[in-house]
Image 1 (cartoon, rainbow, N blue to C red):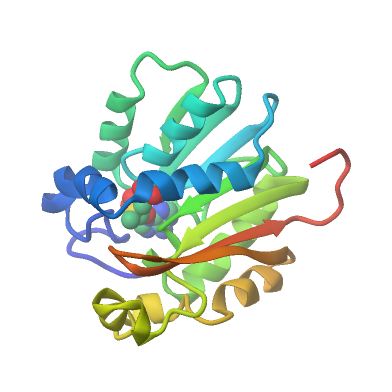
Image 2: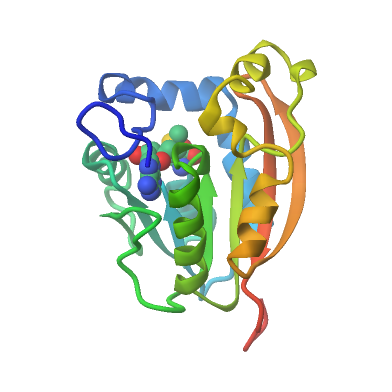
Length: 220
Ligand SMILES: C[S@@+](CC[C@H](N)C(=O)[O-])C[C@H]1O[C@@H](n2cnc3c(N)ncnc32)[C@H](O)[C@@H]1O
């Protein structure tokens, strides 16, 4: 796990002091649109139970609730400060909760969820934690359930711009590139597909994946 100051996780904006600016960055980097795309790819149904791992200040989970009011949503993150912000932002919404948890040790039962969402979280984990997180997501999804993940990954090259050139030098993001994410998810037992990829002015390039736990007992 990447250690950061007194934390055993890397906070949303890299440091607690920058957390208040995180939602501004989300807006500046166009992440609202990224979240909307991921929600569309997840094809949520009214009876779905959905977990977001590494929910940060809750933007993706809250957007999913607003676009699909009947879906039951849980956001989980190790960072109590981010969770507090998420809870404040979700005030008044029902069927949504934010709970403390590490992706590699999820406090949920086997097969509890129809969908797991993950946005810009995977690059916060080191190799061992990534494999453990993939196994945990597989465990908490029902057979036929799906993980939808977006992160810096896939075929990012220096041609994707100055941020990409910086990102390509960072070991924790380098570990996401090429076919690293499909390999990680396939090793955990998922059937994994790259759904889309595009440049992003904030982080260089974003790639979206769908990973299905095989063995559907009901329609996806
Ligand atoms: C860049 S933020 C993304 C937040 C949100 N998903 C979004 O798209 O706006 C990454 C989040 O991953 C969380 N994180 C770090 N280590 C984690 C772990 N081991 N398990 C789950 N989340 C973790 C951080 O606390 C942070 O909130």
